[in-house]
Length: 399
Image (tube, rainbow, N blue to C red):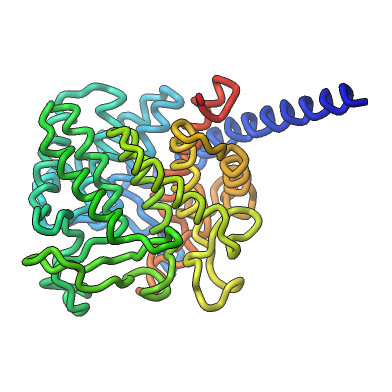
């Protein structure tokens, strides 16, 4: 009987693995078909899609500067990598040309988001020397925002816009952890450790000041640029200063996983594991693994979900699982299966041809609530690609 029970358990395990692998292939095909429709619209107007407006029209990226402008070209690079269909490569190259000149901008921290996802993937796949030079230029612009007295890259300027109304002097947001990958990569490309050293300083300062005892993250830490001391710990996109904004937790998880990849410093691995534990074990998280937009929002369960946070988390966990002694395979599978369901994946030709539904940009600002977002699609495609690569070895990750 014991042998029969073990055989049946092994059969269920194999069935489960085959099921998720088949689901992954199906979702990649769905993504290719759905995003092909979005690509057709984008190429007709030569614009980069960002989200959907309240009037149910595609909202295109701001051509002056938009922190999300790299994600759709990056998605095209991933689909080119998966399918080897040259139309995705042509599209990626054409769209990222629209913001190439933004590599000189020094008034925003989002250059890592923008260039790592677009030109960074393009360089990884094609080894194009021009792409390499653009990455270096963008990194040089980004590090101008680093202050050694603070030990961080400043996120937002505070002399205009809504940020000027908050009384901040040197705000640093948890999102900024995602810009460090560009610096690590450029150090590898150039052999110059100045980029890596700035990334490490930023990661260390953020590790010291951004996290609470339970390893949830504050959104904004405002520093005194003269002394480097913390002035305040607040939020901009979360429910309250003391709450845990869901996408912020995902940024922290992803960011420290990347830091460990490049440095092999155990403290970064430990922090990524701690943040993963907070996300995966939170009592408020619904059984399908898709979080509410903020873990402390006041009207749960009648609060919007944030699919973008789930997609980022799934992709980060797939990498973290390669390094950690913890086994995240069941959580990865749960999130991927949920995202693949009709609840979150749009049917072909709907959702203005974006792939995923039900993300939240900034609820306190009244922007992009319960809509598709180009970065949710990007990190979901990245997660599917990572899973497929690991699945070729018939397991989630090499341990």
